[in-house]
Length: 418
Image (tube, rainbow, N blue to C red; front, top):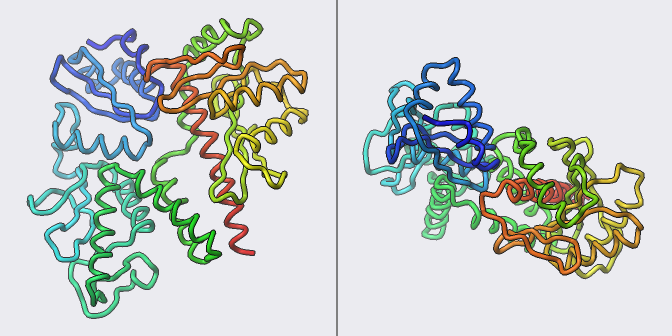
């Protein structure tokens, strides 16, 4: 039987959770906060018979952390289909399961929504439980990578080719180049539906930079809109939902660990996290994301358009942002987090001290993710990958990156329209 003590050791992050009876998997679920969802299962078990059976007949909880809600959704569907867990009724009910089908055997494969797998020659992704969710996935992907949904090839260009959703249109393909382009599109759609999104996402950003560099603004607007759509696809719900269930114990644990380095740190009621977005060296911006009383507070977010010209690095831009922030009459944070390692921490610490404000400062460096403490010697904290502390810091870093990038793309879009 699953107990609350088992749940307390789980990560507060996006991913899958697997209820197991030894090696047998009873149930697979996904959540933006695994620990909170497991605690919810335990509470629901007091009232719901199915939940009670899942908890009673399981003795272990496995987890798989993912970088996005979309990846969690795709992986959940894949594992349910492969493993057919006892309490995941979605794969048993003929009326419920939905699949995204790609007619791989066709010369020009089509993408569509079906209720069941009817053969082994085509590709199927699912099962999914919500028509609305599947339609959203198909529509979003189609606006990023166009494809055909018609069952039969005709002689005239379809309606969707005229609005850019079927390009090249199989009805009009006349040469080898167009045929290869269409098949490339289908390969990219398959890659996304398998959860492999980084290469395609990075490719769009590369395209955007090249188009801007060459002053091809009309085409750049199209790519920018695809990037917006990709962002929406990867985050299937409101970004703030990541933080709704940040457990007090996670921040309590962070406070205990940081107090060793910052004796004056008595609470973490206000945490500010900063990032810079600077694609293509134009319209560089900074972001400030705020967590208050264990919850993300979007009303307190602030964005900074970099004013100084000629700055050569993101570190210089970050220094401008922090200087400008510290001159504002805003509440003083208990802790500042920045996306960066020792050079960034050292530079920002000097700015904080020059402003004669005593604010604890930490950074999160990459490869591997580790915390850099803003005290003499700048010690590294190598925390476990599923550490509660590291997960909270990662979530705040990712949110500050998202917010900075959103503002950056907004400013670019204004440039395009001038």
